[in-house]
Amino acid sequence: SAPPPQLHHATNNYHTQLLLASNRNRMEFRALAVVSALLLLCHGCWAYPEISGSCNGVFSGDHLPNEVSGAGGYTITVGEITTNSTHKRATVVIKGPKGAEGLLVKAWDPVSGKQMKKSAFEGADWGPLPRGLDHFDACPVGVAAITHVEEDMEFGSESNPLELTFGWPKDKEVNFVAWMVEEETEWYEVTATTAQTP
Image 1 (spheres, helix red, strand yellow):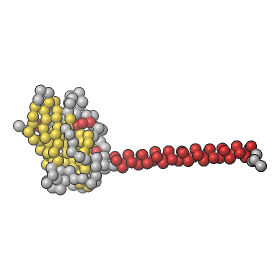
Image 2: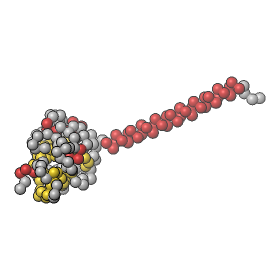
Image 3: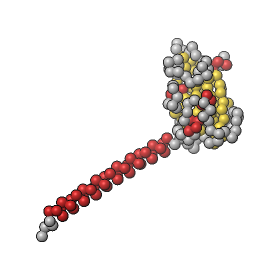
Image 4: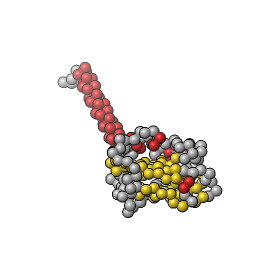
């Protein structure tokens, strides 16, 4: 004989709840997988959050407790400057004894000693970036700073210098600062300026 209507209704409700719970679990699992993937992709960006997580850099004192000091053998130089009707452009070369695992390189305003203001440095931009680097948009002018976005790479070794290009308004000068990170508590700072380049 057929089951009572009440039992049939309860069984249908039970199956419906199981299906909803299963779908909900699948969606939660997919969401968790997406978040995990994004975290893995961004891990290189935030490998050294005390440095690359703030654009204030030398102006803030927000650095890691550093076990070393000085340039550590790294150098940053500004090459020949070319000028067109509105902007200047130069190659910036960074190199050191063995290369760094992480970095933050910034262009900043030597007049104010602070971050570039977008209104004053319209069109400022790092040129095409080498593999493993990207703009650091936490800065007021996001294109004025770059950081590493990949691990297991070395940047700026003696045998393979890091060559970057930067463009800026021709009526301005620019200072550059680079933090080259070899370990989480071992990083070095080097600076350069366009004002000292003939």
